[in-house]
Length: 88
Image 1 (cartoon, rainbow, N blue to C red):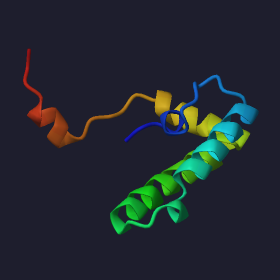
Image 2 (image 1 turned 120 degrees about the horizontal axis):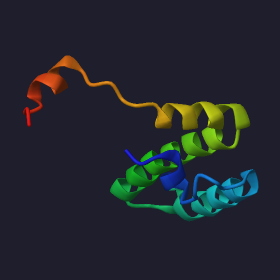
Image 3 (image 1 turned 180 degrees about the vertical axis):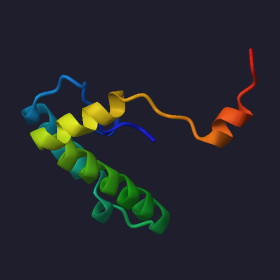
Image 4 (image 1 turned 90 degrees about the vertical axis):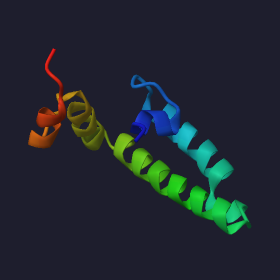
């Protein structure tokens, strides 16, 4: 799944104003109400849900810091992932 920054098409160094501008542009362009075909409408709805989540996370300074920390945190492997890894 793409990161919130990738969804909005902004760099991690983007300001709050840049994030808002990117969100508004994508919301206008990809809003589900703009599509009549049911398949396109569903795709747009799914994207819009991800877009809104990304905007809500990155536009709030506290949530953005938490998100950035979570993304930077190393991911732990599950036992099944460890077992499936071939030794060198």
